[in-house]
Image (cartoon, rainbow, N blue to C red):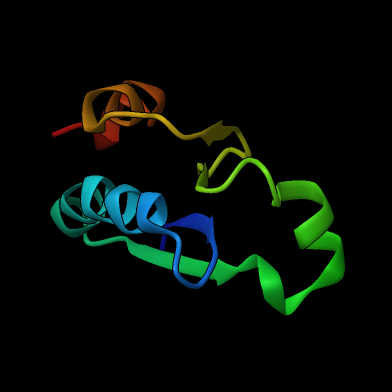
Length: 82
C-alpha cells in the first residue's frame, strides 16, 4: 500500500493541522498516512526539529509546512490525483 509519511511531534498544533490537510488525500486514494514522532529518535529530532510538520511523498520528496491540500495533490503522481 502506498503511504505518505508525516514527521511530527507531540503537542505540535501545526502537525495536527497538517494531518487534517493530508487525511482527505490519503483516504481518497486508500493510502496510509504514517505519522512519525521525531522525539522518538535523536537523528530525526536533529533533522526535523525546527521544520515539523514535514510530509514525505512516495517518491521521497519532502515538503515542510506550510502546505495546502492542493500543493500536495500537485506533487503526487498524476494517476493518483483526485
